[in-house]
Image (cartoon, rainbow, N blue to C red; front, side, top):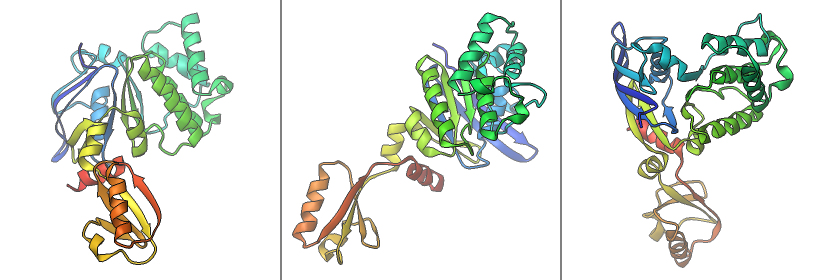
Length: 300
């Protein structure tokens, strides 16, 4: 089976500035993949090259096996992109906007298109806004329309570039429920986000970018295990016994942190603390966290 997205040795230069420095990544069909990195890492440049908005200085990019330069029509038909910026045509209603978007991909008007548009509007809680002018919508509603525009031609590959930036909790829940459905139905999802908990919950594999390069890439579970630790946090009334201080990784006030590699170590550590005379008033076990992984990778 061919990959949904193939990026091989892609470079992009703007004069002397190198935005992408030899990126290579392959995303399988049906995968939910996250591309993470700080501002300026090159994520949006890579997406722009996939979409044909900018041309790579070197390397190749393919969508569903179609080269984005030599076979650009097929590549763009296979791709739906939700951009960071809210862009819209102020002269049309929501429904008219989606019909025009479908027309760009050669989809004729008719019952089939109207039924699909109705389904998109319902899934994104836009049905009551269908005949409103785009200018009348709130920022969150406009972002929902951007998602519908990206999906109206039924692309097998969907790119979400910061789709929940600055939106309310209701939209996030609505959007992710719908995107999960699409992924379960076989659509490939490429997500960029600064909300790392979203990537941790949704994505099976993650790549992290810094200064135009991929600096870490693996399954979500493997990244969590390799760059983050499970921690036992214990709150103690009084001072930590000196015999236990060496095992402590850090402390903040009355809270003392101990790294544990397996949950079976929790009772062993608690027993050692009690035997040393520590009076434990509270405790919690913190699971590996993608934010911690991200900080460790970026600072490495």
